[in-house]
Image (cartoon, rainbow, N blue to C red):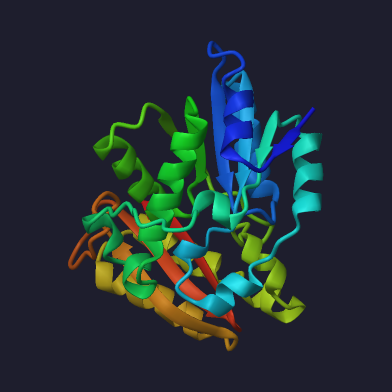
Length: 279
C-alpha cells in the first residue's frame, strides 16, 4: 500500500520504522510517465522499499511562465505509483521545502556552466539544492535518475562525491517512444503536429551517431549535420547543439574518439532536450 505524506516529519517516521531496510528514492516533479516508472521498477528490484518524491521545484525554473505551465496531476501520479506497489509517495508543499527565511543553496561550479547552465541561468543551483534536500530528508540507499537529463546526472554525481552523501546514484537509460522521442513530462504539452515534429531530435542524434560509426570524427562536422537536420523541421528552433567531452561537458574541436552529443530544441513553445553518447 502506498503511503502519501507531505511533511518531512511524517516521511522520516515511515523511513526509519526499520533502519535495517534498504530504500530506493526516485525524485520526480510529477506528471509521471513510463520513464519514471522504469526508474521505479529498477528501484523495486534493488531495494527493500521504494520512495518517490513529487515536487515541482520552483528554484530550478528561470522562466516563471514555464513553471506555471508545468503539467501537474497528483491524483493520477499516485494511482500510477500504487499500481507499482511504491511504499512511500512524498509530495511536500513549497513552504515545507523552502520555509520562510530560507537562504542556503548548493552550487556545483564547472559542470553547471556549459549547455543547460549557459542557457538556463540558475537552473542547476536550484536542482542541486533541492536534490540535496531530498537526499537529506529521505537518506536513501540508492537514488535513481534518467540518462535523458545527462547534465543533471553529472551534476548530482559530483555533488554526491564532493559532499559525501552516503548513497549510490543509479542512472537508467533513456526511455523512448516508438519514433525515438525521449519520454518527458513536457511532451504532454505538444500539439499533434508538434509531437510528430519532435521526433527530429532523435533523428538528428541518430544520424550523427551513424556517420560517426562510419568514420566521421570531426566535432564541427557532427555538430553541423545535427544542426542541418533540425533546421529542416519548420516547427523547430535550436537552443544549442553540442559535441562535448562526456565527463567535463566541454565542447570538442577537431577529431573525437568518444563524445556526448546533446541538444536543446524548441518545438513550437516547448523546449525539449536529448542526448546520445558516441564512441
